[in-house]
Image 1 (cartoon, rainbow, N blue to C red):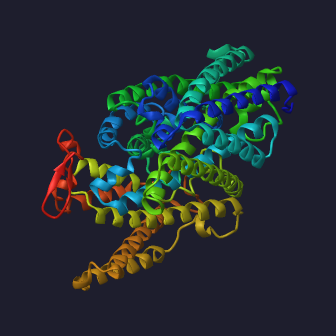
Image 2 (cartoon, rainbow, N blue to C red):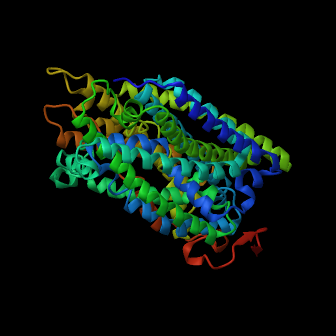
Image 3 (cartoon, rainbow, N blue to C red):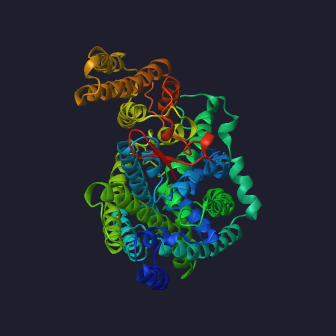
Length: 599
């Protein structure tokens, strides 16, 4: 049975899109400056902000990846991130976001200028802008899986259509349109999921209980927890308990310190206490949806086990295949509108937030420092358009790379997240220690890039080699590799760092600083290659092995903490009021070489 969309389905979806665009147009009339456009006048109600944050969590990535992954492999991938990681967001809020309210920031990166310098602020902001724009491309890519699974649409059509509509209404309305449309989308999504879960249960032998028990009996629960290999740290195991635990801790920390999508919403409330209420609302409302998505994955597995469908080509779209082929018109249109609700909530918030980063971290700092309120809104809208176009392009690129490496939706973004490893150390060291300094962050950034490049090469070459391998072929990149791949970048890195030590009198010159950064880059590459060499030599036998998409060790963070202990304590005006130990003290602003003032 193949999915086909009838005119009532199209009508429901078109009406929904028109309502969303109408919300954007309504709120576009009263935005006089960037604070109105980007932060809703800093007076948004905490309940609406909390629901809006929750809707961002329930992006197309969640709605596609969670049921698809459970259908294929079970719940294990989400067992820690969706439980421990979800509730860790509450204490992580208290660790970072109070400082942003204290400074009256538009973005979290302003805090880094106080703790380090303008250059560190800019490089971390650009890294985060790149990382989150990749995320938006992933949202569009996973959206294409929805319509591909339901109606066999080609990916590029969905990416262009949804990306264009999301960009247009975000341009129109700003933060107020984002938040209030998210509240409406929350209602649509709740109604859609309630109906689909009821219908799923009615179509499964044994109902809800039968759906869950059958799926668990057939390995779709938590089967990996019973395997000894699950508790090993290996790049050749798809899932590892320790790496999942690490991700469940690092993920909330990274989001709380630097995720402009969530932080911009919190900063739209009156004060940090109202923002904290929003965080609690977001967490508590998200958890039931997590359980619902788990159930959908289990139930669709049971349904298609009982009712095989030869037309089911891609498990990432299994949920939407069910919607399109087993529900009468116009119900598929209603459900697809509900799915679009979650997708649009992520797109609008992401695009709006990245436009904020562009305006405050790049345009106002490097292009035009003196803009009127109307000029700020105009630039914000142009930035929104640019981010939307780039996200569409990245969505198309992700579709191409996913087909090349035959990746699932859960795996597809792994090659593109290159600059994100430095973001958490920059913020975490700043709030925890008065020793944090800009030179340490620059060195760690280059070190992490080197390590990341080595890891991406390992993943791409080993995976593509394993896919093409046949019995009798050499193992090549999917087998043991020579230690020279680690020794050469190690020697190069050490030579550049040694030159910095040798020429002591010129250490502050641009050439010597560049030499030091290049040395850190070389050491990072050497570290990444050495991990590849050691694991491939120890664990690969006669069969090729590909690195898991989940594998990654927090070595940049560990190296950074060790280096931090060796750094001298910074002048008091660099950290007073800006670390956890001094949060109740006033912030010092240095006016000249002899005087500081409090704010």
